[in-house]
Length: 225
Length: 225
DNA sequence: TGGTAACGTGAGCTTTTGCTCATGTTTACC
DNA sequence: GGTAAACATGAGCAAAAGCTCACGTTACCA
Image (tube, rainbow over all chains, first blue to last red; front, side, top):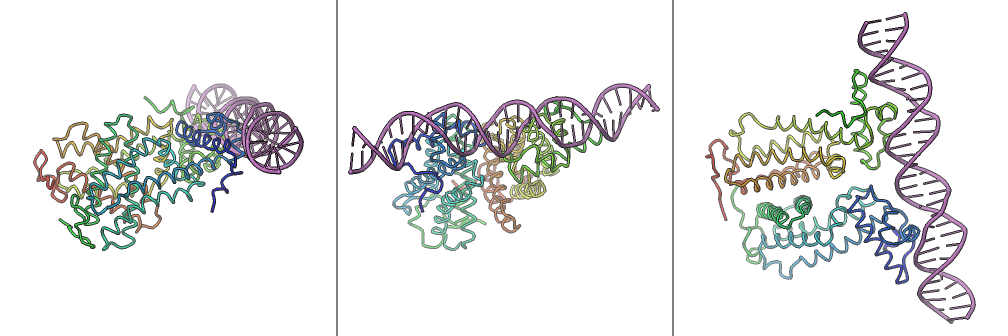
């Protein structure tokens, strides 16, 4: 399975490969500024300092730009996910894992502001297939962690927890990055960490500040009602 | 300040008032089905069983439909908010308040499926002014409750808590209502209740299951780290 | 009952925008 | 250096969508 079907023609020379990248960068910037609906392909071509004909040489239509962007971000997200998965997750605490994850994703969003716009276009028909995969990627990451830390949970419960955590993280990261000042962002992210820690700790039956390695294979440390 | 500036002309006769309502209902349905960007004013007029000319007689442009819809939902939301504010909030527990609030809002969304679409259009330039008000409405409701239950919090903290809670509730309600089956919705809403209860209980220093009336004016019952 | 203003209609004008294609330029390969 | 393929260009086409306007209809009021 190659990425070809999205593009009218694959670039084979260096200059056209650079051009395709420039077009995607331009699309990212224009979509961020105007939103996908308001942005035009001519805008994108102009921003990329190329002609509209060149854009349509490599992208069959406007939607293809969105799909290609989603694929590019998907790859970056995958890299981020593997980077955020520590070598020995058992040595960390639940709170530490969550804090690192949220900080890492926040840094990613700061470096990739267009990604928020893309998330906002998640319901676009052309995107659902590809996007669902990377949304599921994040949810699956959390779900996998949950299943590992709390084997007593059913598969369905793990699924719900993953979806819920993904939705909340996505919403709070978006909220945080509405603020331009780092201080306001941090305040929101701090709340996100607290909320996720409380929730996952209770839901998985894992204490917040105990190294995960010291826990048994099954859920322990459940407290309260 | 009247709603006139949004409309080319205010309806004065009964038939035109009914027509305006029909147009708004049609817009709501069409935006839900196609999304705002894909929907056309001709679609809306056809769905309302009226002519495109009549639509433009009362609405200056397509954006005005969105704004008018937002205003109508704003009024409904306000009614919902006052309905969800019990006569004696002190008699209820934090968990009960949150549960009732989430259930009430869920019922509202079920009866007003177009509202989710509107939320999704929150970043539309024509909407930011009016919408921000009703988003703030929900956040302010929670913020007000927080300030009342936890007077030790600073005004800034209350603001952040309100925003965060609003964002999370909005995200999880949207997630819940992606499912068609009531069971799946309830599963998600159950997680939302748990998460909000844990978060607000910790953040406000209010126990989950103690009647709020039995608490002193300042925060008590804070536990753990 | 007549007159006026509000209301209703839809063909079609205007603008926008996604997209094409004929023409010209650059690169790769012999 | 020659040739073929890849690449690049942008004027402009076709379709779509927002919106107008001239004309007809209904409701109110004296």
